[in-house]
Length: 223
Image (cartoon, rainbow, N blue to C red; front, side, top):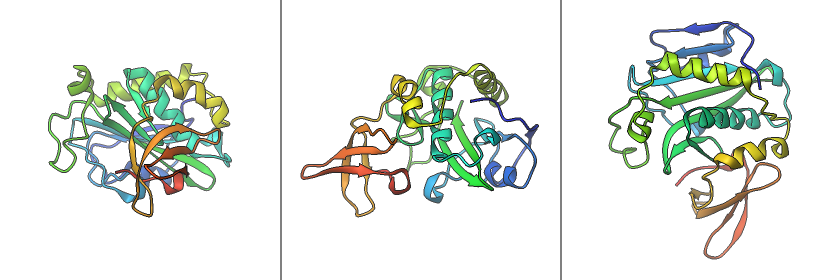
């Protein structure tokens, strides 16, 4: 993976970096005050002003990638490596099972657009997510400004040899940071299952008290 080729644009406030980058020529759009951030399945992404990095990356090098979600998973690994964190399938960046960051991969005109939300110095979270959310400062004691966090990520991309062509290529690096096993997920039919491992295609193999199966990225939800 390489840093996006286009210019990097900073905005003091934006509703969604993900929406904005799609209508620009930027390689990266970022802010420390995103007012309408979203995650997968249009979940709201909480981002306290000034305490988190919200950024979107345009990866033209992976245009028409057969599995574009691997690009987002690759960025998750790079961020986890840089800040000594872990990853959980398919798009969470965590510490001790609590979420510090999230990845959203969308495709526009064949180009993977990867959104990143990363809690840096956030000290408090809304009651509904307080039990499962944390920040780099709370988890690691680090105080990192959003612009410095982005610079570190772009430098890490510049030196990265990570290959995301297939899950087989990505898997060794992902597994070094993987904290997926034992995490609970909610299936579309309402069942709660426990993660066991990730398959050769990059999907989730799970087990319940009565069954086992595979969930794809498109079907994934969280309990």
